[in-house]
Image 1 (cartoon, helix red, strand yellow):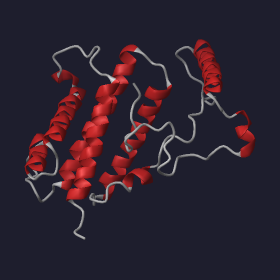
Image 2 (tube, rainbow, N blue to C red):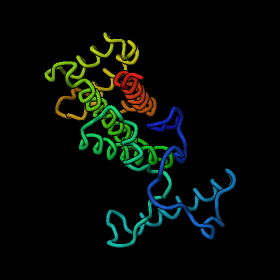
Image 3 (cartoon, rainbow, N blue to C red):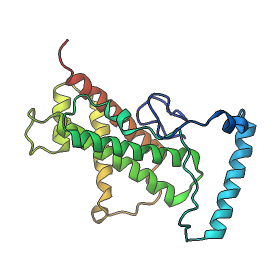
Image 4 (cartoon, rainbow, N blue to C red):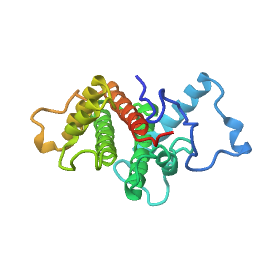
Length: 225
């Protein structure tokens, strides 16, 4: 299963809905561009062999100047993400949301492009879920400032949104699940082993929950026409 894009209905290998970090390849650099799945397989195998050679040489160490370059064209800009939150007035909050969503693009790239298995994969998924849980916490708190007591917690805010017909019962269930899962970031609170617990379907559920509550709040707080 593929991880969905955090700001589109379906996953896009390269996001085309906003400006990207870095610069596109120039004409001369495109002469070896992948044109088919056969090309994709060949290049992927070459890159995989190269990365393994780097690992065999460096082992657990690193090199101060020689690095593998992260590809341009995937990570979207903070400005692109900020524009999706017209209902947030706090400059620091909206900027920090943008930075967090840049990190979500990195997680998405790793999970969709790298064959990483086992516990390492599960923990990346967990951190992605926690990230979207924190985003939902922040945007609901900011959006409902002055509409509900600041002492009310996350699930009381989702209850308010449900009672005011801003979100559906299904979305409230998903948002509350997301919050409970996000709280697993507090390791001392977890009574069970976190093994074979986090899957791509869970990450996609977190992304969809975030998308839907963001859209609902945009509609709820939109100025009257």
